Image (tube, rainbow, N blue to C red; front, side, top):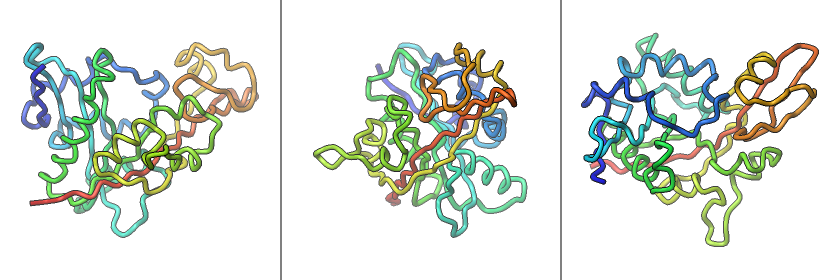
Length: 249
């Protein structure tokens, strides 16, 4: 496979294909309301920040995408509201005409049949290089650890800084970031908040949602909190902030 990675600005004809790619995201992850501040407008406002990858065997058919966004943080500490916070700050900065002084990764999605091929590391490297091209000296990322769903009741602060004997992070996706030059900085305890009625959660997961309190949902990094009396459930996802210092020139 001869992989070709470009920005969406370079290949705008691939805009529709962004969402046609088979992926492994759980359905409930598609229902964070703040995602609407980015995805419906990314081809128009953030095309330089979206990377698309295809190969010579299937030109025009995506094997991966990587999304990032510029935002304004000034001198604030990386926000506890992680992914949602970045999207809010990016939207407000664009509306106000402020200078974007930071860049954050949002996601790297690999086509389902290409998982485990090392493509995620290549997309991360391309995202770092693109951030340099755009003039940034640091890429930050509210990382979704890809093995945390196996331990939904483990506190994120404990999981995020767990290491192996070689000193690298225990989590495989965090290891990819660290090997690429990133550093685990802190946790984002409420990086995403997804709420819905019990009927909505049943449709998203196929689970009964007939028991009050914390419910473990496949793919979720922490339990979903169920309130039968109020007919709703709320998922608060923790992420892990990783900083990637970038070398320019």
